[in-house]
Length: 431
Ligand SMILES: O=C(O)C1=C[C@@H](OP(=O)(O)O)[C@@H](O)[C@H](O)C1
Ligand SMILES: C=C(OP(=O)(O)O)C(=O)O
Image 1 (cartoon, helix red, strand yellow):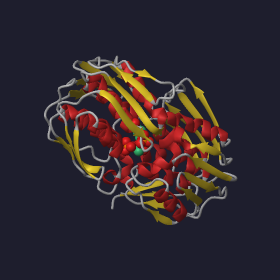
Image 2: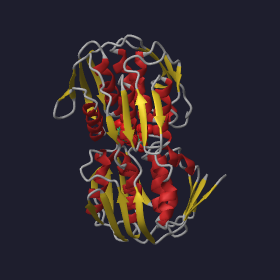
Image 3: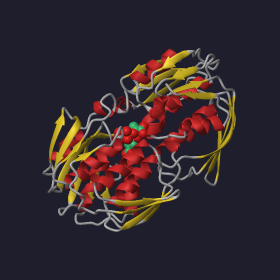
Image 4: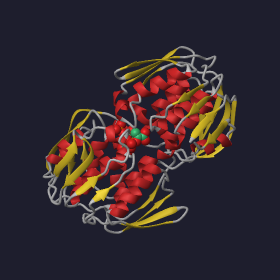
């Protein structure tokens, strides 16, 4: 599918924000690891969250879903002896389930996106699993990956956190179920630290006890715990909504976004502060966020590790700011659906943006008069590239054509419908 994005000066209206992908994947897994019946209200529907649904069902979770909730009876620590799992292109789902799969004798994660997830590294998690009596067969740390488990053991575990926080989150889900107590030490750095807070939040709601150091680098996890069956309510999604906010920030706009909690633990909530710092007016009234864009943005310097999945959308906004912006501490964007520094910058340059890349930074020289556009963009299998380039296209002179725009469904299938409903001139065309 192609998205033909035309220059658009105004966006107005109200959007019922999509449900949080990161909370949905976590609640689904916590429900599956419980032996009782849990209910999740307003779960997200996207390729990634559907991948988690499908895999936990393959592992033996029973589920029934209607338009508002999903009722799940979990398998506890005794999943079905499934041989193969397909996570699609979902990194978090793969990494979280690599630990869960160790409760089965032998599970192979297949490689269905060789050009995207197939290129992402999982070595750090593999090394941690190997310390737990789990044998892992892999292709240089990449898919396909076979987990030979059956009898995983807790104890002292070290895991590196400088490529992805998902490896640590994965271990935090499995270790409470093991017979032995565990201690997890995070080596090097911990990137995307904020999202570990969401893991701990969900584990706490599921009745799991974990002692955590203040810097989130050390954990004590008692063994023999049980996930309690629970009622969970999924809040709105900041990473996806950040793209709508960026679109509103680069146009003349008056947009309300419903269901975005002001006290959310999602790191990408920082998109609100970043845009405020760039001079955009944003206000909350309970959980409705109103944004007024007036076509004017100021540049700034931002530590992108605090809002990993919103960096691309905010870089897109900075493309139109007065002055030069710097998004630093973002090296791990290189290990996502594509290389979100090199690949993203090359698409931005095609569109006419003035950007520079460093190993762990994106520098944007703003062009308040807009970029040229008039070119075709390669999506690189990346939903966040698609959304960010849509933002750029709205304020380009000749528009943009985004190829393979169907990949937006990885996290936000309604993105184009939502932005069209605000008045964005976007046409979708099947190939
Ligand atoms: O734990 C999670 O659900 C996620 C963690 C982050 O990944 P990294 O820790 O690899 O940065 C984020 O980018 C991803 O979209 C979801
Ligand atoms: C990187 C992302 O997801 P994942 O790592 O789960 O594939 C994302 O949603 O932007």
